Image 1 (cartoon, rainbow, N blue to C red):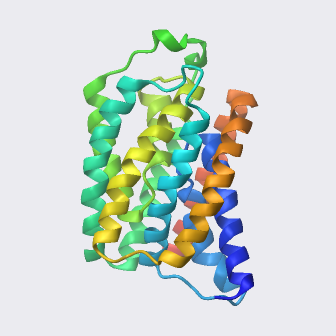
Image 2: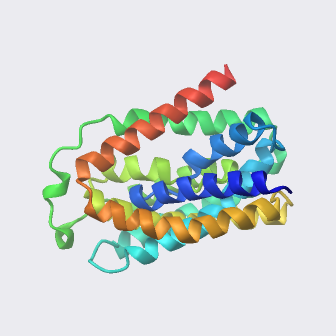
Length: 258
């Protein structure tokens, strides 16, 4: 692999992981289309949808680990929320990750498009007053959280995305979790989810390890930097950035599917 290819993959990983740490998502909603479309634009080797989803899965594991470490202090990690949603999404993501080998590339892209569209719609639902709740007074429906996480896990495991781009809107809109707690806890839940998705992809031989290694290095550098930036930003700005990113990606994927 030439130098241009290495730099391209590293920059894709760096940008996606910075956004991952800042917004509490695994970053695949950014990196999936970037890996799929950017290398061919520069005349570099093109990845298949299966290869992209495999690289995304293992990279998300390290991106969320770095972001979660940066948020470990300050009371932002909601342990019951992480336990219920993390356990459910781990089961779902392994099922989806293992079963994805049986799907066509068009099927993988279709699942990704549906997930992104649902997440985009949810991000534009008004979220009034959630950031006025003290962190130590936050409550939520545990079984609803677990069921939704299981469903997200299956779909996210298929595309190797870990599901955070759907978890964040669910936590904000359905479970009414404050923004910064959502971001921190989402990173921890997505880290757990990525274990299942990664094991599923590895066991079925869907990971191209060399570009995945480059993405991992970029993730470990960029994700904590993004988390530090996110701590300093206004929560409304964080919500708007996430909504724009999810909406733009959904449009791009659906234009290609249709």
